[in-house]
Length: 315
Image (cartoon, rainbow, N blue to C red; front, side, top):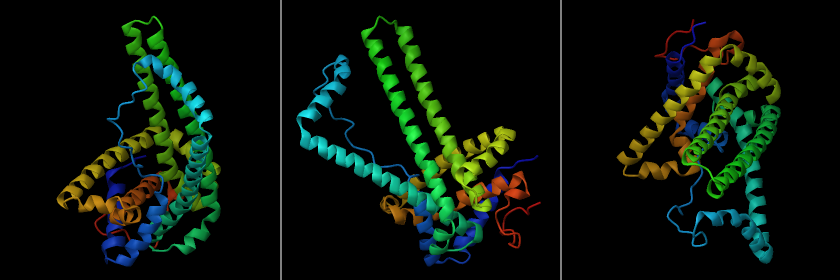
């Protein structure tokens, strides 16, 4: 089996140009952009706090870090008002995250349907793929809590190692090896969760869409394919990573060349999705074109549809 990467990307790029620029329809951009916005609600990096240079006077040395959890708990118990406020904020943000996961899960099928059929619809795919969207939501919710629990457990493990490094009689070489081990463990966690999220969005969701399957059944259908063609899918992830780096560079150049006006447009959530619609559209079409190479059962685009201009003819 000859699996290609450039040609599927070229066909995805051609489909994007045909759908968004031939002809250019601003109303279509805003409609499809809205579904892309919903689909990518939790795929965008969140804001970062700006307290990197702040000095914490309570920590005069590293040994005080060990006492911080108990001191923080005692402080919360002595300030019930702040405890209630923090608890309310935590519940609020968790509820908001769950809402975003639900909207995003439904939005992924809306955006996918618009790409497959070159349409600009919101209401019809919202209801048509309700079952698949809700199944994806439940899977992502459970998976998210598992990842969160694993991340917290890893932080506690790292915290205990750091404390033992400063309180125990450990040589410099052992400290270096411990730090390298923690870094490798963290990178492995990021790599595994990143690939799972990529495969879910790029392959499992389309399989759910095509065969009206639940998330678990779609994974059961995809995993044998992944096992059989492991290296192809791993390389796909590497290519996506490199393409994302290229996109980030282009976005930075776009912002600089527009005297930062482009940056202002991109940080407005919905408007940013409309402006970057050619990127998200191309990536969505690319994943489908790539998956179609593994057999006719993974054909998504209508057979009656002509091959987009400028792309290689499909075999």
